[in-house]
Image (cartoon, rainbow, N blue to C red; front, top):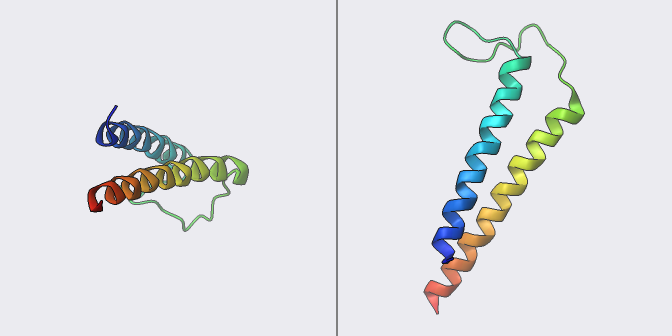
Length: 77
C-alpha cells in the first residue's frame, strides 16, 4: 500500500474509534433537547472505561500523525 492508502485506512479506524467514544458518552451522559451533553447532574462515569476509550482515540491520532509526518518527509526529499 502507498502511504496515502495507509493514512486513509488509519483515518477510517480513527472515525470508528471516535464513534465508539461518543457512543460511550451518549450512553452515560444525559443530553439537552438540543443534543448537547448536560453535565449539571454531575453523573459519574466509569473512569477506567472512559480512559480506555480516550487512550484508543489518542493512540490512533498519534499513529496518523506519524504517517503524515512520514509522508511530508518523503515529499520534501
